[in-house]
Image (cartoon, rainbow, N blue to C red):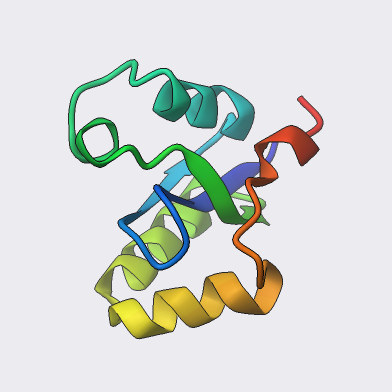
Length: 95
C-alpha cells in the first residue's frame, strides 16, 4: 500500500493546500466535488499540481507536516520543479 503527500491549488500561484492520504484518486476527487467544507472548498483548490509517494503513513504524515511549515515560496518551487505549467495531474493517476 502506498501513501501520498500532495498539493492542490486553485490556479497557478493561487491558493495552495498540502495534504496526505492513502488513496490519492479518491481524495482529489473529494476536493474536486467539494465533498467536505473547509479551506479547499472555500478557495476552490481542486487541481492536483504535485504529489509524492511514501511507503508508510507515518513518513507521509511527517513530510506533510514539514512542507506545511515551509515558506510559500518553497512550496511553489517544489511544484514548479516537477510541474512547471501547474497542470492538473488528476487525469494522470492510475486508480
